[in-house]
Length: 248
Ligand code: ADE
Figure (cartoon, rainbow, N blue to C red):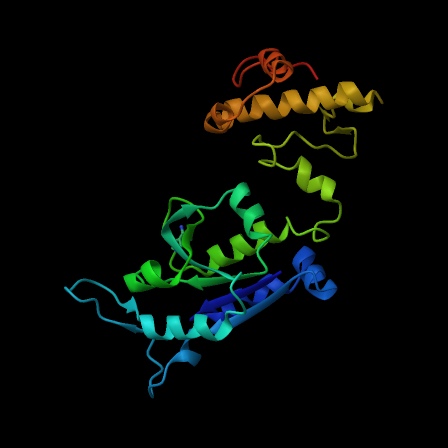
């Protein structure tokens, strides 16, 4: 799939390509990313992308013309989707990231905190996406987050598909705990069950830990989830946060 990012700070996105999983995905051709400078779609001497708000008020507002023009220039076909990054958007979650990973081209417009002309949100884009209930100075970090979360769902981007499947949120739960060597680090021991070689037991332990963590930290997620009787039983057997630590 392909991302096109429209921004007034293209340099802010540079780090995204320079390492790790995303760099490999780009090299393998699983992912294509192009960053576009909004100022390239202006036609005046000063390359002006913003202007004062009608009705008065603080700050500047991104003008509609360069944004509409840039989207028209980079849009590949009818299946392309266009999103404005803004705190007014629908909240990014795992389901949305997965849905976007099936779109051949996602165009992301980075807003600025002062605002973007409303006609962009109303008439140009397919939707607005927020990465959380806080206000960033601009959409660039949000574009980074969206691209990262979506890329992980593209087959082949993350080493083993298995690890995406096991991740937090994939089945609506937080992740279970992970351990590696040493077995004993300054008296902090790896739970015995992980050395048992009993896969069913380990799998139950992981599920119970994931359920308990979700109940204690994100009860809102657990409330949305329909638990099978087996899951409910596992959860009931997990001690609550603040209570005695479960003997591992
Ligand atoms: N731009 C400013 N704040 C944002 C947020 N929370 N999510 C997405 N884009 C933004």
